[in-house]
Image 1 (cartoon, rainbow, N blue to C red):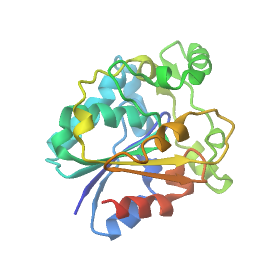
Image 2: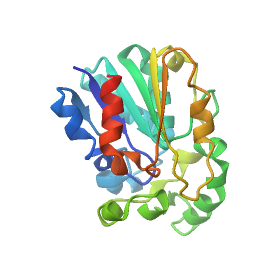
Image 3: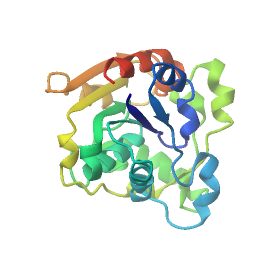
Image 4: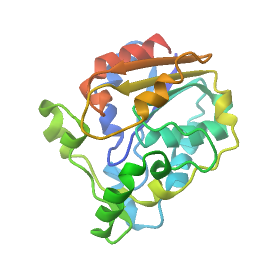
Length: 237
């Protein structure tokens, strides 16, 4: 049995993995889908103090520690890819594999979401100004390429996201590189948002312990291609 821990991306919450969960649990695995501080059902915490990338890394570090988890398959979606990299840098000995799901690929100390995806800097900082400069208003699920059948459900749950999560730089010492297995799953469908994610992931294909997959399903693959994502995860559990 593996412990699957999923970390969602910007504006989302643990709810976005609901369609992947059943296949993994039916196969006998434990599945945890926490919601990060300040978003989703924890959006009420966004006013209690500064929330940044470090906050979210500690959310997951403490989950793993307090639940006594080992042999963890740690999966991050989108912005969550920065979070899982930071977590693995602190707890690499508890992580069996890292799964990067259509998100940026941090490789060094000082990387941030905006440094890796600079095309998001202007629209998200401008949007933040409309909410007082601390929160970024959520984009509708249609922008992420979510299938029409799921859009109303997703839109009812998306929330704003703390801006500091995107500006704060990762503090890495390189321990995350010791995780023995890495799985990279990217979206091959054009949703109108330029991205280097396919290029980054394909560059990992021939590296030891790396497995690369592409799915034609929009950015939110865990919603549009839940069965296929679960199959890939089970293959490498």
